[in-house]
Image (cartoon, protein in one colour):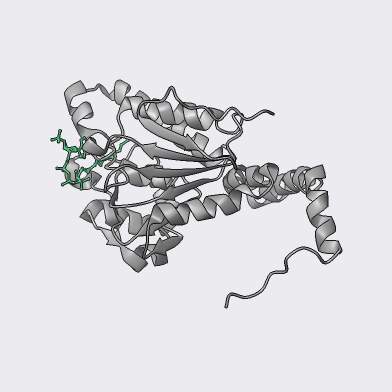
Length: 268
Ligand code: 1HE
């Protein structure tokens, strides 16, 4: 497969690719705090539908300006005065984008700054890794806005922090930040420095894994978690049958057998 790392025809997303196949994808509406309008969701669908086939090995997803993402474009929603039917279809496109992210097999690392709220948290929780910095804060303002989640928070935010804490977050408009947010599971990493820099370091590391192994990690685990334990164990065996016998892995296994591969040691 020849990589085709050209994404010039995007307007809502700025997409820069690196030689190792890492794509740095930036939500590009800073003047609207990267609120998710219909056009942005459509570009996310397109990106995550085609990323693997275009040769992207990992994605770093960031927001431009001070805030990662302010969630649903409330002004677009208010102006459109949508019918229930229309808004249901808007939400279905959000699910299309976020499911493609979570199940697409390409690792997505979110570099979080400032507000990660409402649909912004739904977007972030569809990534495989979340890195926050000292400016990052999480909230579900839907309760106060007179609306409800529609982009998967009931599933993914509940998965991250548990149902009762998610209910409290949306009922109270409660904000989480700092180490507490990591301890609760909203992010896996926090840095004193730049979340983008740290996300790029992680992405470089991830891009050095074999693509089929990353595919299993960033697709199969989510699918397996939706199955019964019996079926998941069966399907895991099938996935392992394919991944653990891939020709590209033989070199790495041989290096281990020959004692030239790095050993796993505790952190200093
Ligand atoms: C927006 C949006 C938006 C900002 N839709 N336009 N999300 C929320 O409830 C969060 C709403 N936003 C905020 O609370 C704040 O804007 C922020 C904390 C994110 C940033 O504050 P600040 O002081 O830096 O910016 P600002 O002055 O509030 O906004 C700057 C501009 O961004 C302004 O536009 P302007 O044309 O007047 O300059 C704002 O209108 C615009 N803006 N946030 C549209 N969200 C599938 S269901 C999902 C349900 C949800 O996501 S609900 C959560 C919605």
